[in-house]
Length: 272
Image (cartoon, rainbow, N blue to C red; front, side, top):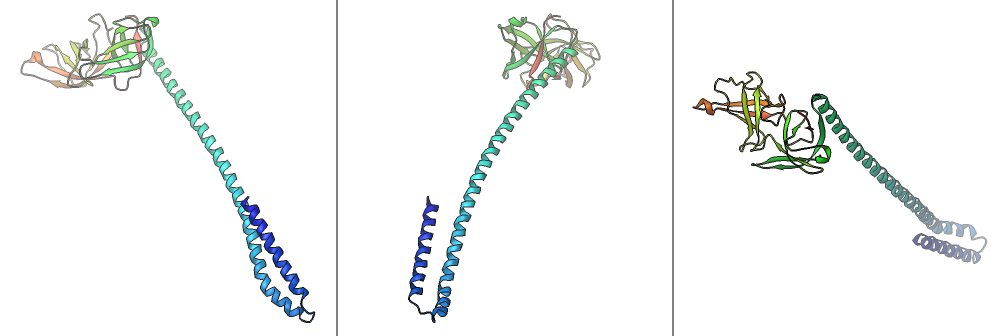
């Protein structure tokens, strides 16, 4: 609307100037025409040049606004394409995560071919100074029962302590009330491994035979005694040996093979 008004004003101004020129010319003698023309050219040419510049400027603005509209439309199109690409990336990440989970299940099953197992995912954690349990997404509907052993690709996780139709609660081996009958790989001596109050990322080996030789870095595995855990499942390695005045009280610290802070997928052993 503003551009139409400007164009109309320019037209009125041009018309007035032309009428003024015609009136002046009609009242002049022929002999004075030449000098009058020079005067008119001198007066009128700057005005004409100014009006031409103004007209071109207005036309240029029209082009500018058209380009702005085009850029806006292009920007909206790019925003839409960017949103679609972000959605595709999210879908790819989800598929990638699912694929990694399936690979973990396959690797677990290949590693523990001697056992009948049910795969599960960790859906909840209860970690404190006194308790370290997890909840997995399988239950009685999947054949899960209490006291079944739970493992990961790295080693022993714990055992089922309660179960519902679709979930099971697992007491991990780093829980302070956990106790696992274990064997030292080199000496084959039997020890007891339990969780600690001091550090829920470590285990403590106690009831070590007085004649047992402990070596830092030795592997610890389940002994098969106690009625819960099958024999030979990896637990961790000895990270520190603590000698006391009374050799019967000595103990060792064990670093678990499983990183419980990052545990996501497990297998429940349904047979022994």
